[in-house]
Image 1 (cartoon, rainbow, N blue to C red):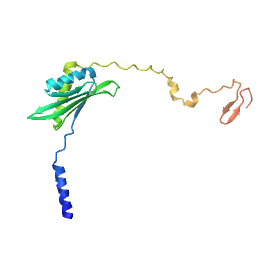
Image 2 (image 1 turned 135 degrees about the vertical axis):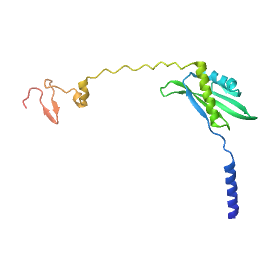
Image 3 (image 1 turned 120 degrees about the horizontal axis):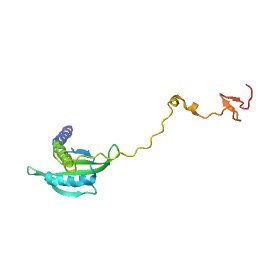
Image 4 (image 1 turned 90 degrees about the vertical axis):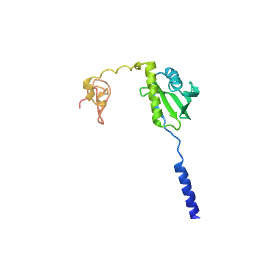
Length: 178
């Protein structure tokens, strides 16, 4: 019985270890060009520059499915275009490229060529207008920077007609002698 279980376990381990795992690599980059300009350039790149057969595409959903034919074999690929906001809250496009069962260097090379095509066709990125800055705060008195918040409060003076509370004692503000 023990030998049977051991043999089954060894066969299962051998099958799992020798089965190739699917490639999960993908290449991605972010560009500041507007989505409306990146989409047609990406379609032209996939079909014309790379020479891949486009299987499906959807501009609204932001994907291109294509087939790579290489050495008599065919591999499926996908290019995703995702509208995002960059770290300065400006619109940007994230490009994600994945080709099944191909090495990651192939994906990285293609994404770099696509970036180069964008620069060549769309030109250098123009600086985007900076968001309007809130109005500057008025400058504070330099002497006031060393003053504690408690000392900046308005305290009644001795000429007012109300009692003044000082450290738990009442002083008369009506001319009373202390």
